[in-house]
Length: 397
Image 1 (cartoon, rainbow, N blue to C red):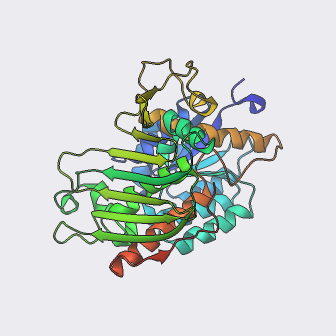
Image 2: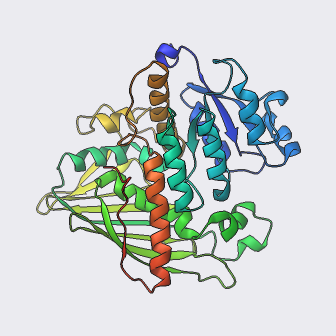
C-alpha cells in the first residue's frame, strides 16, 4: 500500500516554482521521488497568468493553478478530504515565507518550507507559536541533513564514538556572485541581494544558515555565544557576500562557520569537520557518498554509502535508496526530508502521537534558531565582532 494505512498518495500544493524557478522544481521532484506524493495544485507565481502557464509543467489541471496562495488555500479547504491538498510546499523568496506558511498552518495544512524560515526572528517566533497551537507537521528543508552519511555521522556522534565534541568547522563556498550579477536579469541573484526580499543578511542568510544547521544537526551541541564578521566585497552590493562566525557551545567547545559567494571557481562546496576527544570526521557535499573518520595512531577510515554494509547504522541505511557504488546526491537527500515528514503526516492521520521537537527532519524549532543565528551574526558584525548571547530556547538536540 502507498503510505501504509493512508493507502493513497499525499497531495501537494506548491507555492512558487513557476517558470524560471530553481528550488520549486527541486521540491516537486523530491516530494514525488518515492511515489508517495503528487503535485495536484499550485500558486506557481505571484503573477496569475504566469501561474496558469506553469501548471502544465507539473501536470496540474488549469482549474487548480491558482492566482494566489490565498485563493489556493480557500479553494482547497472546500474540497473533500482525500481530494484536497494534504500539505503546502513554500518555495518562494524569503520575505514571503511567513505569510504563506502561517496561512497554511492556520488553515490546517501541513507545511514544507524552504529555508530560511522567515524574513526575521520576530516572524519566526510567531510562526512557531502558530505551529505549537496546531496539529500540523512543519518541516524546514535544510536538505543537507538528508544525506545518508550526515545521518550516519549524527548517529555515531550522539552514541559517543568520537568522544566529547570540542570543535566544528563548517564552510559553504560558492563563486557565482563574484560579479554584480544582480544588475542583469538574473532573478536568483536579484532577490538574494535585495534586503527587502532576502532580509538582514545575504550570503550568511542564504548559505551560512545551512552550514550552521549542519553542525548543530550532526553534533547536538547547544550554542551559547556568537561573534561574527560579515563583509560585502562586491562594490555596490547591498548585502554581505562573505562572512565568518565563531560559536561558543555550552559544553565549552568552539565552532566556526564561513560562507562565501565570491570565491572564483567554487560551485557548491559544503564541508564540515568535527573534532572529538576520541576521533574526528570530515564530510563534503560535493563528494557526498564518502566520509572520512580519523583517530591518531590508526589508519584513516573511509565510510561509503553502502546500505548493506555493517559499518552503516540504522539512520544512514534508512536514508539510502540504491546499492553501494550507485551515486546518490542532492535530489535523494532532499527527498529524505520529505520522506521523514511524510511519515509524521501519515502517523498524524492515523491518530498517532508524533515527535515535534527532536525530529529526524529539520522543523520549526530549527527555523527559529536559524533566524536567531542570522540576527545575532549581523548584530555582532555591526559591533566589530562583539560576543553576543546566542541561546535559543527552542534549540533541539
